[in-house]
Image 1 (cartoon, rainbow, N blue to C red):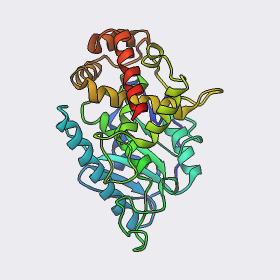
Image 2: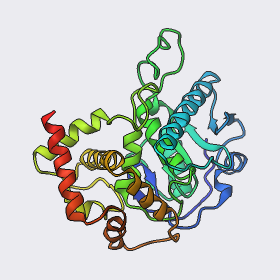
Image 3: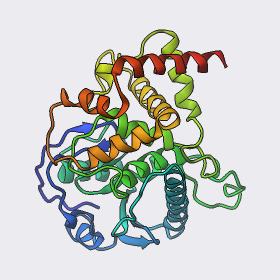
Image 4: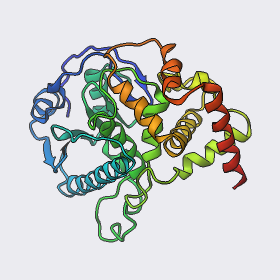
Amino acid sequence: MITRRSITHALPLAGFALIALATPGPAWADPLYLRQAFFAPSTQSYATDHFVLLHEGDSAWPGEMGRLLEGLYRQFYDDLTGAGFDLQSPGDRLAWVCFDREADFDDYARLRDAFDARWLKGYYSTRTNCVALVRAEFAQTGSPEGSDAADAGEPQFDVRRISHELAHQLTYNSGLLRRGVRNPVWLTEGLATDFEADSLVGAGFSDVNRSRWSRLLEIAALDELVPLPRFIALTEFRPAPGVELRDLYAQADGFFHFLMERHPQALKAYMAGLARGAQGARAREAFPGEFAQSFGPLDAIGTEWRDYLRDAQRR
């Protein structure tokens, strides 16, 4: 249970990753600090090679969750190093804070990140470098590895949601991007959605995210994609009247996969440039120019992107 210590830092929200522009402090990700500041003494921690899970009770769940996270970690690093990205290893174990009660999760987000998380059940925060989640909302029917784990009474997981949040966390702990820098949301959410999978077997960047891809082709056929010059300058995906969040995520997923497939060297150069950027707020007007420096004129990329989608629709 969370102790109600007041913390007030107003932060913007970008999809399922809470992006903080102030310089992050290392104490926020320290498990001992988290337990002392936010949790009852009965809260337990479970450590793997690369992660530490804070949780209440249930001795079987953290072990299975830890194994899933480690498997996804290996897939993330194998895929991107195989594609030529230079990745660093996280300096410390990465924290996942797992709540049994939605009210505790909501209080945690409000007190620790000054953030109303009631429309979410899990998020990654760049300021704290932690993933917070409601454990029951990340459960599912069926085994993440397609085995008979359900019959064996083993814990089950919503691998799609877990892989999404993990991709955010690893992006900022592998050197791909830098915490405290405002990045375009098509990139941060596109990378995370492209890594999503329904099982550990299907995780990775090598194939399209079929559920997102199906929706992408639907909105492309209806000519409802956000125009590319505006899309690449967005800094957040938020619920709003007339906004279909799933469409924004589908477009981000498809566009990231397109660039990974057709322009991998330019994508690496683009992300490396962002990672070297100064911390703090940046004008979104700068994003199109930065994009063009790596990928070339927007008109040309836009034409190639539309042709790419048309070819996919014919298949």
